Each structure stands twice: as structure tokens, then as C-alpha cells.
Image 1 (cartoon, protein in one colour):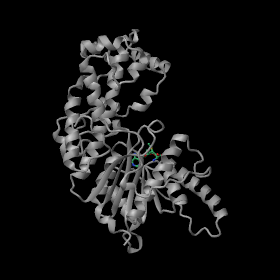
Image 2 (cartoon, helix red, strand yellow):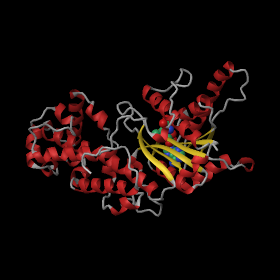
Image 3 (spheres, rainbow, N blue to C red):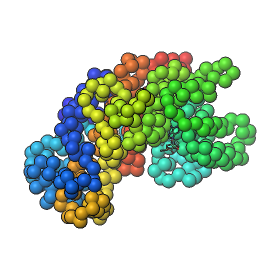
Image 4 (tube, rainbow, N blue to C red):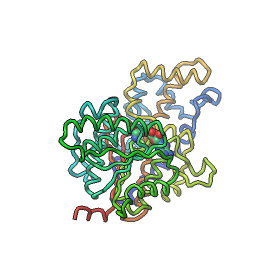
Length: 406
Ligand SMILES: C[S@@+](CC[C@H](N)C(=O)[O-])C[C@H]1O[C@@H](n2cnc3c(N)ncnc32)[C@H](O)[C@@H]1O
């Protein structure tokens, strides 16, 4: 397993192998993952770290601490091994668009009208994701795209006006739905002025609804394409669909025949429901796959919070910002103490965040793979991680959808 850096696994067995290797590794660092900053001094958390590691890291510069997981020659061999294993297990995050599942991908730069109101991060995400959704949707001959957790409708509007796709934007917030409609009408006016007839202009349909299960998402989606007796094909798309919303998308993809493809970028893992931590009768969002259920690793809230930590953002902190970050933690721990302990401790802990996210993403991948060879599934780092740290999309298309254009 070590030293193989890959973007996805072809088979469920390979994914399971990777999941188990991560579970074994993370279980060794349980206390570091579960640590709560307010208890740092009370519980003398630094003492839970290997003595040799702490002795070495206390003397390191902030820059070198932020560099973890990169190791230096003079570090103890066990610490270098920790770093090497971590690096070998974590999903690579460099943007990579040359994936067979995105064949013929071509992103159109967004003009000022469509990108109005977006910051550079959002513009980047929407530009790339819209092109990816369009590529996949055309490949399966989809009639409709369902933008799940559409927010202010940025993705929906680009898919409608730039890519001429028929889109339904679903969001739980009535305010977001109103903003989406108002914005779409403004954009439509602009496009209509440029076109001889506006009959080709598609405006996203908005639906205000809190999606609480995959069944309701599937039913809602089918209703949007089932009008006039036509049952067309659907694509589910989600840009930073928080918590269980992403999970419901995955389940709807598996269960609903009309849903032929899925592109999902998740976020807010802290909001995902977890089997062991919340005793509810509802189906939990983690773990999803049988493989992860059997791996023996539970996450819990602190670990899921840590999975939201961005390696790129962490690495790019300036020394000043890092010191402030460490001081903030020290302050919150209510003791004034040097960064000597908190810096190394927090840097080691932060380095585990991307690995926990890898585990969550692999659980989602394996969940789809465990349903047999019905779909082609890939994890694709779609966005530049320095701009958009939550950058990995799960892209899936049903195999029978290959007949789409025939
Ligand atoms: C992180 S925002 C992403 C918005 C948009 N996709 C974007 O990237 O600009 C998540 C959106 O999902 C919506 N949302 C969260 N949970 C939802 C649920 N259960 N059902 C429907 N919408 C939900 C929120 O209102 C919010 O607009």
C-alpha cells in the first residue's frame, strides 16, 4: 500500500484495502484525533505524543511545523515513518482533469454577467464544475440536471445559460431560491438582448425543499422530469452539498433508475450523522460502506471537524498567522504558555485531517462500488486546492447509460 499515490480505485477490493490501511493507521493516533483544545493543559495532551518526537519538534521553526507532512533528515526515524505512511495513504489533491470519465471536458471561461457576485474561489469552482457536469450529462443523454443544495444558483445559472441544459435548483432556503430566480431573470434579460429569439433560453426552475432522505430527493427529482408522461434521465449535481445532503445524493444515485449520473463535491463533514455517535432511528451518513463499517474505526465529532481542515490552507499560513493560530488555541485553553508544546501538537494533529477526509471519501466510493459493476465511479480532484480546499468530486455514471446517444 505504501508509496502508491492514486486518485481512485478500480475495484471495491482495492478501495477496501486502502480503507483498512487508513483505519489501522488512524487507530494508533486516536487520542490525537479526539483531542479537544480546551483540555490541552488540563490533560497535558502533549504528553500523549512520543517523547522523542516532542523533544525534536519543540525546537523546530514554525515553518517546519507547518510543513508536516514533510519530514526533515534529522527527525527521529519513527517520526519520519509517521510522515511517510501518512503521505502514502492520503488522497492526492492536485487538480487533475484528465480523467476518462470527463472525456471531452472543456471549460468555458465565465463572462462578467454570469460571474457577477462570485468571488474568485466560487468563479473557479463553478467554471470547472459546470463544464464537468455538462460533459457527464451529455454523455448519458440527460434531460435534466438537479442541482442539489444550489445556494444562490450560481452553478444552475451557468448550466442553463452557458451550457443550455435544463436545470432544477433545489435548496432548503426560501431566501436562496428567491435570489436564484431574481438573478436568473436578470441574466436572461442580458442574453435575450443578444439573441434574436429567447425561446432557446432555459431558466433554472427553483424548488424550495429541505431534503432529508434519498427517497424524497429521488421522488422530487423524478417529479421534475416525469411531466407529460415522459420519464427522462437525470444527473444529480452538488457543489459543497453539506453533511448528509451528499450522502442522500449517493443513495438516490444507487436507488433511482432515472438518475444516470452523479457529480458530488461534499463539505461540512462535521454535520454528517454518524452511526455510533447519534442514536437515532434514521439511517446514518457515516459509515456508508460495509467495508468501512467492518474496519473498526469510528470518527466522532472532533475527527469529522478535523476532516474539514485543509492541508493547503494550513501549509500556506504565514509564520505570523500560524503563531496567532497557535496562540488562539493556547488562549482558548486559558493558559498563557509558549508555543513550544501547542505548535508541534497542533501541527501533528492537523496533518491527520486530510487523511480522515480521504477515509470519508473512500467510504463513499466503496459504498457505490459495493453495489456491483453498475456504475463507473471516480474520485476526481476538480479544483485547484489552494483556491478551493474541498476539491474532490465523486463522479459516477451508470454503465447502461453508455447507450445514451444511440
Ligand atoms: C455550502 S452551501 C453550497 C451552495 C452552492 N451549491 C454553492 O456552492 O454556491 C450548501 C447549500 O445547501 C443548502 N442545504 C443544506 N442542507 C440542505 C438540505 N437538507 N436540503 C436542501 N438544501 C440544503 C443550504 O441552504 C445551502 O444553500
